[in-house]
Image (cartoon, rainbow over all chains, first blue to last red):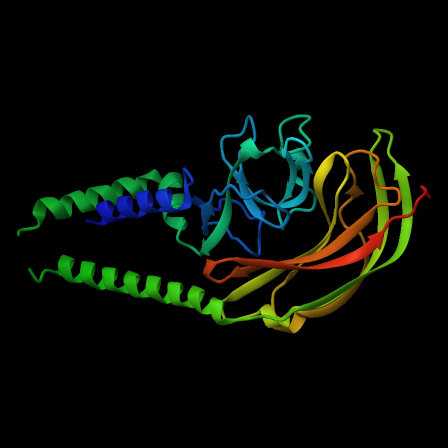
Amino acid sequence: MIVTSALIIWKGLMYVTGSESPVVVVLSGSMEPGFKRGDILFLHMSKDPIRTGEIVVFNVDGREIPIVHRVIKVHERQDTREIDILTKGDNNFGDDRLLYAHGQLWLQQHHIMGRAVGFLPYVGWVTIIMTEKPIIKYLLIGALGLLVITSKE
Amino acid sequence: MHSFGYRANAVVTFAVTILAVMCAMASLSDNFNSPSPTADVKVLNVNWFQKQPNGNDEVSLTLNITADLSSLFTWNTKQVFVFVAAEYETPQNALNQVSLWDGIIQSKEHAVFWIHTTNKYRFTDQGNNLRGKDYNLTLHWHIMPKTGKMFADKIVMTGYSLPEEYR
C-alpha cells in the first residue's frame, strides 16, 4: 500500500515537473543555512532560460553525484541563444570553477538537470540513512516481511 | 483487525497526512502576502577598469546598497537571499548577468539595511565591450521558505554607465 502510493506520487511528480528525477536530497552543507543535509528539493525542468539567482541541479563530467548550487553569472549568446553559466554554493567562499571538469570555465544548458522550485525539510534523511547504513534497510524490510507473514486477515 | 500493528499504522498514516496538509497550507499562505520592498543602489566609485591579459574587460566598483525587504517576510520564511547583479547587452551576448554582491537575511529585523562595499564577485565581461557601456543594476531576492514553494522577484534600476576609458 505504502510502496504503491509512493510510486504513484513519484510518477505523478515526473509528469508534472517534466524532470527525470523530480526530487533531490541535499547531501552537503554548501547551501546552508538555506538547505541543510537531509532536506529535499523539488525540481522543475522548463524551457525558460536559466537566470542568475536560480538554484540549479547540475552534472559535471567525471562526477557521479549532481550538485545543487546557485547561479551567479549568465552570458547568453545573441545568435544561438546558448548560455554560459557560473554557479556557487551560498555557504562556499569561492565559485564552483574548482568543482568543474579540469579547465572548464562555464556550465552549458546540457549540464543542467533542473531548477529547484520547492523545499521540504528533513524528509531526505530517510534515504541518506538507507544508503549509508544498509543494515537498517535490511532490518526494515525484514520487519515488514515478518509483519506480512504473521498478520492474519 | 484491531491488532497493535493496525493501530500503529493508522496513527502514523494520520499523523503524516496532517503534517503534509499543514506544510501545504503554510506554503499556500505565502500567496496572500503582497510585499512592497524598496531598494536603491549607488555606484560611488570606479576603483579601476582594465583589460585583462586574456582580453576580457574587468572593472571594480564601490557600491552603496540601501534596501527595505522586511515586507517579504512571512511566518513561513526561513531566509531571504538578496543579490545585486549588473545586466547589460553586448554585440556578442543578448544578455549578460553578473552578480556583484550577495547576502543572506535571516530575520525581519535585519531586512532593512544599507551597505557600503566593493563588488564581492569579479565584474568581468566575455570580451572587451565594457568601455562606455550602459548597464542596469538589479536587486534580486530569493525567498527560501521553511517549507514549500520558493519565491523570487527583483527591482531593476537603470541609467548606469561605465567610463569611456580604462583607468
